Image 1 (cartoon, rainbow, N blue to C red):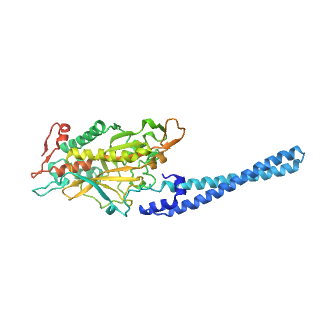
Image 2 (cartoon, helix red, strand yellow; image 1 turned 180 degrees about the vertical axis):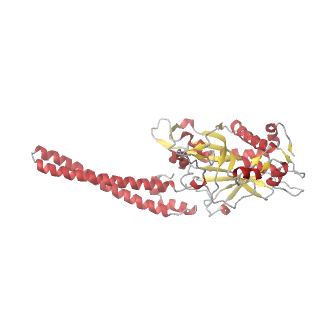
Image 3 (cartoon, one colour; image 1 turned 90 degrees about the vertical axis):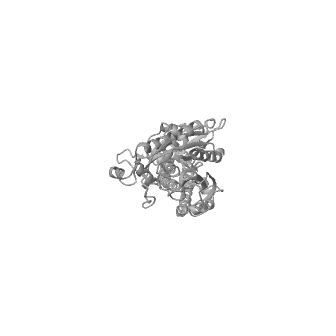
Length: 427
């Protein structure tokens, strides 16, 4: 959530940022109206409060001088003022609540070095890694490869749960598990993350804290009982909320967390997109990276987090590129986002496999996550960062497609073989 005072004092800058993000500015205009109304009401309330103080002194003087009838008349006036003041306070509270609702619906402000553009066409590649393999046979996609090897089954998944679900069998399931364990091991032993296993169900406050609510309500799978819980769309939600409402010691920052979880998304509004294969499923798995940082270090921590995610692809020998998202393509809560895109031979293109975002204090304000520096009584908001390290299903796809052989078998990357009982090939 944006800081109220920042929005009030930087209206032109906020308006420009919203326009750059293709976000309507009507809510900002309404914010200005509500702020003016709030200030008016507070001014009237303060004037009434002063009048009440003066009248209270006059009543005391009248009582001392024996003018009881006049004192009673003054008391009645004060009682009327008190009622009017209470009504003004209700109007103030209503305006403030509406202002908070408007702020909750505004996206984060992009950093100055984020490219301005309407959509993904304005994204800028910052680096690439790896050599694209040249095949001397007709390349198959992961669906044909997986089904022919008997390790991927969509038909029975649809029978059980409907479309956009899949079943991995045998070596396919083992490969998925190997990727999860490999990623967690690298991040915890090489990159300094603490492994955590959070709940897969969260409440509405947690979803608000990481800005899934109110904007992305339709993309959630909700439980229908009175508890109001929802399945997590990403481990970012429970892990970033781990210290929600707390005041941390600055000396304990940064904090690094790595979490494997399944993720659940309804993919509202995406019908017809990526319907073939594992690219866009209702249930998928990720290893998520989350950082809590001091404000002055969050830009550096963002670069390091992105490099940590890239390292997994390097160790797997999978070509990729990293792009910085434009203002029109970046995520709602981010102030800057890098997308890491892995090469898929069957599509002859790069596809997103990790999105690494610096959210600055945007999420921390929503979840009231603060820290205090030594010798300073003032609290400040933590900066939060997150990114996939990596999306397991899309990494599975990339391994199958980049390591496929002419006979339809799949070579196992060397770093994964110890996690697969030293299996060297699927086929």
